[in-house]
Image (cartoon, rainbow, N blue to C red; front, side, top):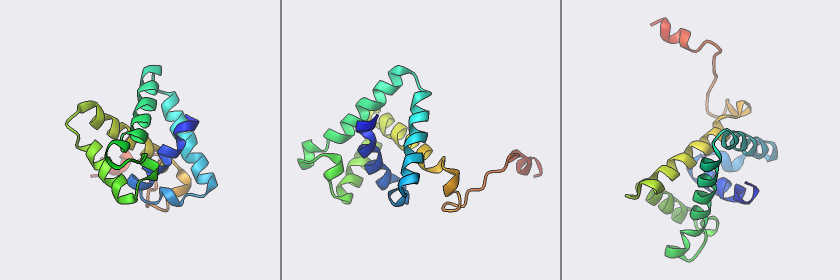
Length: 131
């Protein structure tokens, strides 16, 4: 997992506005939440996720001659859009899984709830029942 943290942070900075401005404690929480989410998955899914991150790192070399982390922000966005809409199902699913994991790492931090105006309620469904 440690070797993939730079890829996760680079992808996170492109698909999760604000994640690139996390302080050290925020990045630690980001990594911890992602690690916990991945630890809850089967070993096969963990391997698939690691392989997908490796692909995200190396595939841009075929078009731009650089790894994902060394691309310009515009080219990173272009590559991620390519994954998101790719006709190859596994690449598309991998992108959405990656995006989900990044969202867990960012939105899962209760310390950041003021940034995105999220205030969970212990009985959140009570608001729905009142309608």
